[in-house]
Image (tube, rainbow, N blue to C red; front, side, top):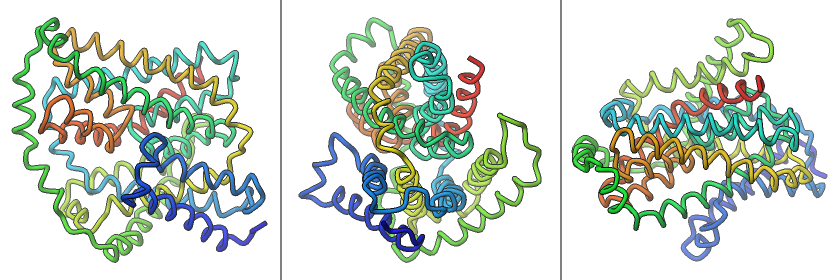
Length: 387
């Protein structure tokens, strides 16, 4: 068994690079159509630790999470165009809010229903799942750290977070055929699509920006400095037992710092690969979480998949009621839903399928979810704890 922290880090790094390399290769990329790379980045280290290749109790894992998670959040948040999100319009934002509230309500209801079967200790796991389904993987990992979710609770939640969103995305894609009939029945105002399109047309300029691997690597050091500043500030703030810890304050502070920096010229760091560097660090954090997990906890995921279906069902009901009340087109309902449950990678796809040329709407709504998902996940977790 490999026990030296440096060698363990090299093994985890090799597994991450292997998965990302296969996912981007033209010949092997199609293998990840149904089970995305993020699952394998988590699952392979779990197998390596479970089969005795690397030490599952290495102190390396806690240090990686402590320092690299805040740094990754900074790099993911700095390129965000917060002003563009504010210009999306009240109807699009209202649909997103309805979907997020549906996730929280569904999470609390689902936990209440399944608590006798999975145990009361899963309250934090449901919160981490809600963080992902109102934001994304980064929010799920951030909420896990803030809530101190045990490994045996977090592991099956990763399975649920992998399976359910892709099934839901398939249903949304199939629902595009119902769009004309739904909009006629709902008497939806389709002019909102043209308005949103004109407001975010400039965002496509990002697509052609030059990416520099050396520049992206150089961004890690200042991101680590911001991480250190967040840790320093968090230690000065009061802790509330079972509610707010130093880790919680660290995540909150680093999120606020990232958003504030996005309003400065530092947002142009994206041309050097800020978000890619952030994603790479985030995936490395995920490898350490997987290495600490136990393969035995995967069995819990079978029952929790049903709990995930309940959450999504309540979420869909909230969106349908909001669409009816606001006379919103099905495009906005589907895009807001995928922006929450799917994230930045898949929301633009659903938006483009429903309305060609409107992929940026899905992207910006998903980014909005990244901004608020961690906080919403923490709130839903404590609501579950009260249950």
